[in-house]
Amino acid sequence: MKADVLIIGAGPAGLTAAYEVAKTGLCVLIIDEHQQAGGQLWQQSQILALPDIFPNMRGFELAQFLVERLEGLAVEWLLGHRVIGVYEDGQIGVTNDKDVFPVFAEKIIIATGAAENAIPFPKWTLPGVMTIGAAQSVVNRDRVKPGSSAVIYGDNSFASDVCELLLSVEVNIVAIVKQNKQLGNSTFGDMNIPLYENSSIIEARGNGKLEEIDIQTPHGMITLKPDIVLIDGGQSPILDIVYQLDCALRYQAELGGWLPVYNHQLQTSKDHVYVTGNATGVSNHSALILTGMLAAASVCEALQSLPPEETEVVRNSLYSKLENEEESDTFSARKEHIKQFSTPQLKDQFIS
Amino acid sequence: MHIKEHPILGEQLNKPITIYLNEQPLEAYDNQSIAGALMANNVKKLGQSRKLVQARGMFCSKGRCCSCYMTVDGEDHVKTCMRKVRDGMKISEGLEDPELRRDIDEG
Ligand code: FES
Image 1 (cartoon, rainbow over the protein chains, first blue to last red):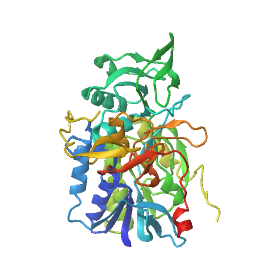
Image 2 (cartoon, rainbow over the protein chains, first blue to last red):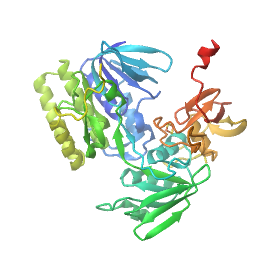
Image 3 (cartoon, each protein chain N blue to C red):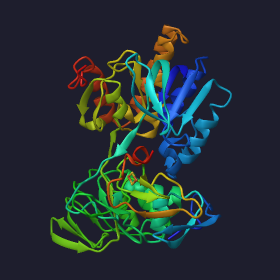
Image 4 (cartoon, helix red, strand yellow):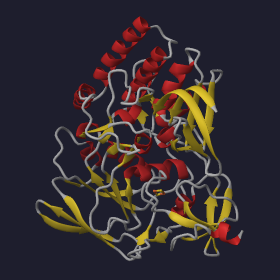
């Protein structure tokens, strides 16, 4: 198979990039391991803050919008397919778990997103301990109550969205345990849920499934008996394909950990490979859309479907929107990451 | 428990089907994942770890952690958070390593 641009990942960033690239007349191939395009958006029922070119919508509404917007453009799909490697001549190896075949593209955009981190503690592998995102997808995708009483463990704002969702399907939230003291307001107060700050889960117990947990609080140890513990450990970029394409990496804690180095054009250390969305650093939904547009603009410039002067104007305006719309810490870490483009900490991982 | 009326997304569970966990019939609905449908039936333990023989269940629900492996219609190591239920499906716990070369040996 052949395309001008191969986009790996059909989440919000990949779908946005696909639209912007295809609009200029280039042909795009999108690959995603799921059978349905839209990525994690389908299970996101919360209202998302989006760049002002979009009305505010819920995650699943945005998925539908981004997919429908591609109708009539030169976009081909390989859904239910995965990238599993690179051939010697640079073609990309793709599989549907039955056959493997090569795909050739002039440019590649990595839009593989991010995955949730765990916060381990003794016996955290007991059934009933899961990520907070898993609880959200069980409720919204499977329409199943993950349990009847939950403890939420973590420090991130995503927890409050899922908290509301769980309460709305009558899951009782017994406690929220945070390792740090949050600066600013905690919304959990309004929901009347006991909040333990500067605390951590020190052990879980149960026979074949979670039955109780011990929590160390500044005022001593307490034992609770939830049937689920939901871990909110933040997210980190998914790097499988970054490794396979042999892109150089740097560590940037504020952006979620290890991630590919990239320049102002969102181009990685491999000239033909660009990166977008959470794979450029974990951020909010606005940033997913804006970096999708940024990577697309640079790819179009490189393939001459957009004139360079015009691209520079587009890029500058996207960067200033990004500066307004993402957390200032994230944006400064991103600027720092771009500055360090030529000094990666990990490169040439494959000795050939 | 199955959520019949979702507060934001409305109704969706309209086609009930039956799946079998170790021969025991359980109620599921079209379009649910296997792990999700089992969770609705209060089945949390989906398998056990090979080395320390400890219970394992759904963890990420995104197809990344491999904690939800089960045997489905004779196929070992199926990520049950990603595979959808089908009427009459036969499921058993993921207890050991699959025989990777089975078809080659038999062929
Ligand atoms: S629960 Fe993680 S892969 Fe299924």
